Length: 196
Image 1 (tube, one colour):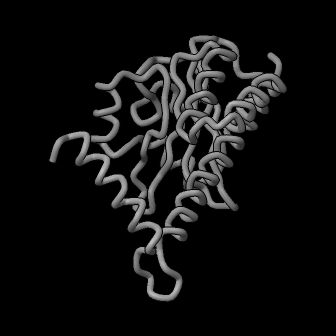
Image 2: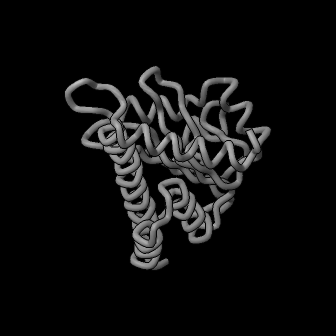
């Protein structure tokens, strides 16, 4: 497994103007391809502790609905609380137990925290049918990929803040004249398109 290629492809994708969502999706796909996983996901947690699946591979829409209906999984809250990764194999007491299992039965599950500026914001996990544990090198590659995903999420959060800063007038806190004209232009185009 060539760590440099995985990380480079993700960075190249992001610098080639992929959206944040597309870059995270690419990272998850590269992990799935490299590790031959059953499923892989990036899950963030809001201030109330409810998780959101940012992107996933190998999870059905039905499973994702049940995930949200139950407000997440125990493994997510445990990783957010401890800030430590976890490797679950047959010897682990939580092996394939409810709360530590996603849609598929697995032989090995590896999850690591996502952090921004020393604050845990979620986790990235992958499960696989391979009997062997993840090697130290594979764990390092996976952890580095998760760290790269944390940077992309941080960039996404900051980009949203910058857009808001340009939309608002510094002195009054009201929408700026420029923003008003941008929105007016969008509405005129929409009205012409729909005939209203």
